[in-house]
Amino acid sequence: MGILNGNLPLASLRLKDDDLPTETSIEQKRTEDAVLEKFVPYAPHNPSKHSLDTIQLERKKHLSYLKKALKGIGSWGAALDASKPWMLYWICHSLDLLEFQFTPDLIDKAIQTLKQWQLPSGGFGGGGDQLAHLATTYAAVNAVAILGTPEAYALIDRRSLYQFLLRMKQPDGSFTMHEGGEIDIRGSYCALSAAALTHLLTPELTENCIEFIQRSQTYEGGIGPYPGKEAHNGYTFCGLAAMEIVGGVHTLDVDQLTTWCCGRQMQLEGGFQGRTNKLVDGCYSFWGAGDFPILKAELDRQQLQSEDYLLDREALQEYILLCCQSESGGLIDKPGKGPDFYHTCYCLSGLSTVQHHVQYHDVQLAVGDAKSTADGLRSLLWTSKNEYIIVGDVDNLLAATHPVHNITLRAARNIIHHFYKEEIKSIQDLLPKDEEITLYAAEE
Image (cartoon, rainbow, N blue to C red; front, top):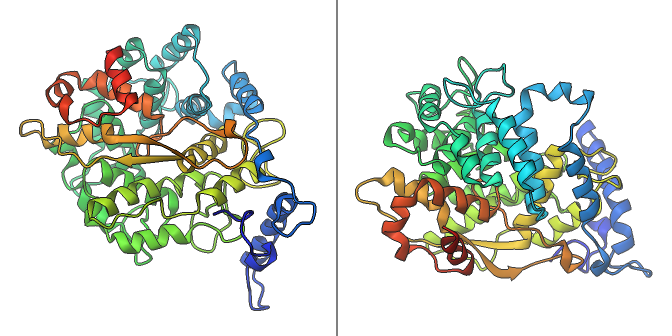
């Protein structure tokens, strides 16, 4: 129902610290002050209250901010030298959510750039002279999916990519992020997401993955980077999405996980925090809200159907639209911060998630005896219902993002149809019959 269209005075939602302030509670109150300043003009008990219908996503400003970045980001970008594929993904996905039409010239330029980051030994590095890394490989594969042309798909060397993924795989089901690198849940998600989109899931790659993620669920209910570590919203999404890819969500304590995820939405701000007792942050608009379509799908599979996602969809939109838009374009962490491509991407991804109702169709996709192929095709079973919750102007609606891969549904379907052509032909009658899939099949 949102924070601003309820009946409670906003002050009643503030943190209660029992008059025993700590550094944490002081920072929380400062953040609440900054958020309240943005909310007061729309507050329910404000005599000169502004209408929520006037709230706008500053689409033109954000498009200008992102399009400018495609021409170059200046010397300050040297600090992000190891994150080039990430920047391309963040920018392209943000543009795609805003329904920007990529020109052939832009697509070709992006393809030529991506080629420089792919290593002959497999995977993508942060730049042409860097080690292959699972995180930048995930970002590069997602960027290819967004570009969405046969030339872009052909860029991916699937044989060497698979060998790279296998080299990162550990016997306990975890993945190292790079040769000799750290192990955490990000590796599981990045590896399995890239494999699912490119038809590389195999029993060898997925062996023990479910067990490793299951052991990483904490006493709180969320998921940590690896067993024994604190639950975190970013790691929780990565673990949950990886489990969805391989059909393992049911092995988690879903009740406890759902309780933890719900508890990360902030009472006053409406946005999400990353961990217990931390501040709200715009990027968790996706890392937090992105859990809920997957949780709802699992509850539905367990015949514990809920009519909607178990979060306040309007409250999150209010936080993003009122507190996370930079006047110069781009989106931010919280009031007072500056814009960057990371927060722009994940604020918009979270906004898309709670505007749309994306549902999973529980269809058995057995392709012969190849369970791994069926797991890869699970990502085709998500469709957007023609039901929207939009705070503010109706033109605030973004394209629908895929709950597992965080690229648009269109981009996910197109790359899967490309790499699974033969398998899809054999199970076409089982796929959800919605308009978007029908139109896509006609293009093929």
